[in-house]
Structures are given as structure tokens and as C-alpha cells.
Image (cartoon, rainbow, N blue to C red; front, side):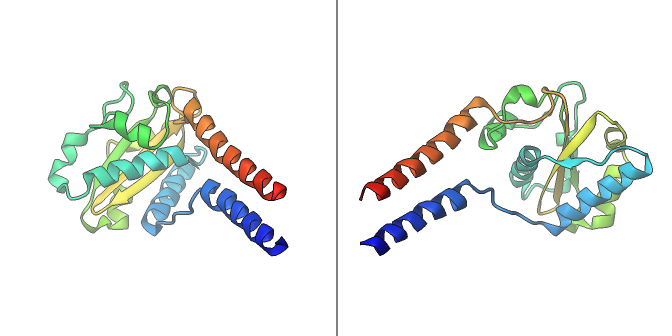
Length: 192
């Protein structure tokens, strides 16, 4: 009897730690670009960009949406400063990433398409083109990076509430549901 309670308790703990934990995702190309962008900013005496998981989610979703699109379509996804992030289906993508739309207005999406994502060419596309002005801007303090096929996406964020890419109130409710389920399972086990 005691061993079955212990097994059920272990199951509840596994639920809490595995379901609630954010999955660790590593992508060497994305990590190298992120480091390269920070090295570029250091040469300009700007603070390093911090990783923003929500912006990373959007960057991943956009790169997934662009999967299979030829690089000749890159001009279709030009940035439009002053309007916040502009991308087809952006409103659907932020829902997938649990981001409050009001926190994206000051952010910017920087799409680059390079065959085989050659790391030197990708970094050059960010640091020696029209995108460099955004990387030179100290208002951008965070970034998320995503890639798929020949597409690399950088999403820059700010510290302001309108550019932080933070989640909405619904996220708190979802998190509370998970903890309540774990609490009730734990109480059930104790009462057995």
C-alpha cells in the first residue's frame, strides 16, 4: 500500500516538473547568431541583448511559417518601423506563443533568407545592411532568434511595456490550473 502511494506521489512530482518545465531547445546556428549580434553591439559600446523566450517563440513560429518559401520572397516580409511587428498572421502567432498583443508594438521583426544559412553571410546580413540600424539602437534590449530552412528571424524587444513581448493574464490562469491539478492529485494520494 505504501509503495503504491509512493509511486503515485512520484507520478505527481513528475507531472509538476516535466509539464511545468520549459523545454530546453538548443540550435547552434541560432546561438551563434545571437552571440555574433552581441559581439557586434559590444563593438558599439551597447549593452548585450538578453534572450527573450517569447520573442524566440515568435521567431520560431515565423521561420516555420516561411519554411519552403524561396529567398526571392524576402522582400515580401520587409520591416515597417513605427508600426510594430508586421508579418502575415502575426496575430495568430502571438496567440500560439501566449503573448499579449499590446506588448509587441515597439518590437521589430528582422527576417533574413540565406541559402543553407551560411553563418558568416547571415551575420553580415544583420550587421552590414538596413538591419544594422536596429541593432545599433540602445532601445532594443532583448531578442529572440528562430530559423528554418534558409530563413533566420530575429525579433528585437524593448524594456518598455509596449515592446517586452510578455504574456497575458490567461497565462496565469493556465499555470494555476496545472498547479491545482497537482495539488488535488497530491491530496488524493495523502487521503488514500
